[in-house]
Length: 154
Image (cartoon, rainbow, N blue to C red; front, side, top):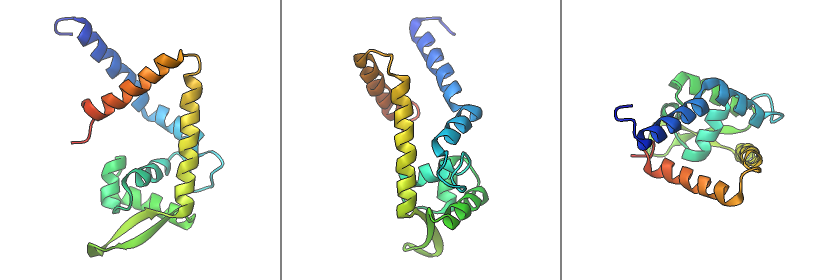
């Protein structure tokens, strides 16, 4: 810490907590739990692709690659597995006839909804011991941090 003030400590505390949340092993374990019993194609490896498609809507494999931190071929391989399972489909890009968009099918949308309900339930369970006002303040603060903080969309 440069000057060791309380604001610096808060920044370090948050950075440490984010480091824990973003560890690959933590994410993989969470994704495995969220995808359990949703079919062979839905696992910790394909979770980011399904989740990102739900956030972005239809997009190309190259665009999705940037969202999930994979290369285009990695996204394409995962999308092929999800397509074979009926969760994703490929459609011509109306803006560029040479390009293909990945999109969730109705079944894919339902699968994402299950995973999101599981995640929300897991988060709610982890906050059960917190006073309700503190849990609500945390939720508001986290949302504000993600919208206004250093990780917000440009």
